[in-house]
Amino acid sequence: MTIQWYPGHIAKAERTLTEQLKRVDVVLEVRDARIPLATHHPKVSQWVSQKPRLLIINRQDMIPPHIQQQWQQWFEEHQEIPYFTNAQQGDGVDAVVRATKQAGEQLNQKRQQRGMLPRPVRAVVIGFPNVGKSALINRLLGRRVVESARRAGVTRKLQWVRISKQIELLDAPGVIPSRIENQQDALKLAICEDIGEAGYDNQRVAAGMVDLFQDLQIHHKLTDRYSLAIASENGESYLQALADQRFQGDLERTARQLLNDFRKGLLGAIALEIPPS
Ligand SMILES: Nc1nc2c(ncn2[C@@H]2O[C@H](COP(=O)(O)OP(=O)(O)OP(=O)(O)O)[C@@H](O)[C@H]2O)c(=O)[nH]1
Image 1 (cartoon, rainbow, N blue to C red):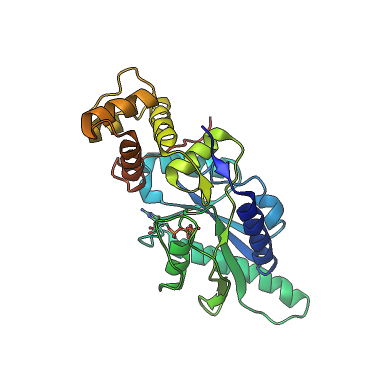
Image 2 (cartoon, rainbow, N blue to C red):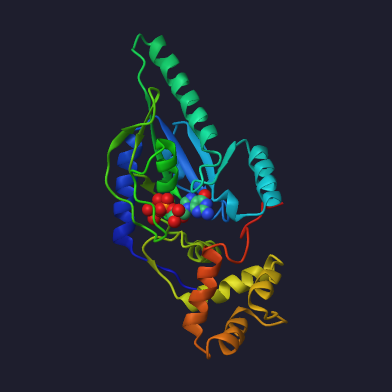
């Protein structure tokens, strides 16, 4: 399984992100609920430094509720408060606004102690490509200012927008470049399309997805959708069997179909990661 990264894009994304972080008081870090660990970048704490950070686990509608509960508990055990959202529908966004305001109140208390006037808290939404940053920004603003698209890597430019008297937001999300050396994490990012401008092979990623479903013991999701049992095959042979059964042996078309069905939620609510025990 090889994911090919484009170093020029990564360096540029890192520069833009660090510039954005310099300007803000609070950071809203968005992760993908299907893969909350793989959408964590190890350098985030270094980039964010001492600033308050809110952890937003988006796409909550795409995982089963009992797994969401397990993550809630896991993060709390690790001294983090996760805010679960469905940015497409707006679920959970009010709690994010309240927490951001609270961070602003703390900021202004400190300013007051130093004899400074209060001002709105400045925030930025950051996260891997395609985790739902633009959708969240649009929800926070209650209107559509940032393009939100299924294609990864569409967001760029920089502007401030006022959410309320207390909060100002950078309307361009900070994109965390998704170069992840761990190939299993890279595979999950590719399956979820949270990978930005990287090159990958659809057939390998789709076969890897089938293997992952086996490991997670959720292969019945494939059987339910395609009426083709997995038997003992590995991902590659399943892809071949499905191609023969449905797509005249066309492996590329089969791989795209599998990935698309997963990404659109047509295989049901599926978590690709569960909290480590
Ligand atoms: N089902 C579901 N879809 C979502 C959710 N959040 C965002 N989406 C959809 O996912 C797609 C990507 O969302 P964006 O908001 O563009 O993601 P982004 O992180 O800004 O992406 P980049 O611009 O590539 O960095 C869009 O089609 C959104 O409508 C969610 O919570 N649930």
